[in-house]
Image (tube, rainbow, N blue to C red; front, side, top):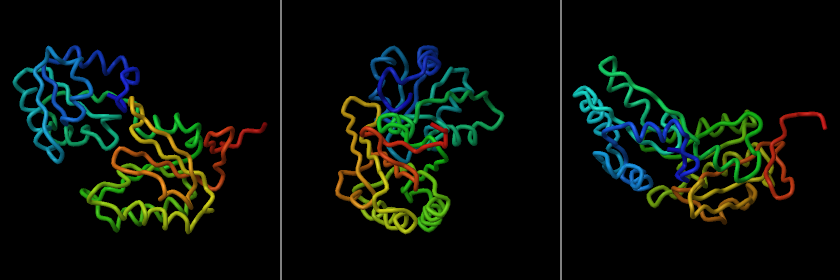
Length: 232
């Protein structure tokens, strides 16, 4: 369903919502599309219920129902596609419908920061050991990748974004441009451009997407641009 703004839902995803008999999803995402699915059987649940939602969706599909499992962004990017495929096996057919991610929506609002090689790293250690996340941040710094950071900070995770900044500043200038987009693609979207040195002075939370430039990223007329190398 994309990042949330109605005109960023693809026509294919919209058609699938209309065709489905049952809609299953995380309650926050369901709320964003409630006017589109008022005539459907809707089943929602809270965080950390992904496995239960997947099993329920597959069970209902086995009963002959046409089921749509909702993810924000793209279902294959920190979404439900993987667990659905694992649970379904060869028991029911599964169609994965791509969508606009928070990362690409945020990048468009900031300018063109991911025109060259980039990586996406979630700072949530609920499913990934923190040591592995640290290794990935070092690898991104050594490789001079533009870094898109998901889940940068929550009430229970205050230090991870500070650690990420400390790691990346080992490999690039403190003046490296950084973009912070809160609620990318939603009505209350906020966009800030700062630099690596001053990153932590800005408001950052779970609805924020942080894009940290590489050694070539610069500002052009107030926009972040990572040149791809075209001759001008």
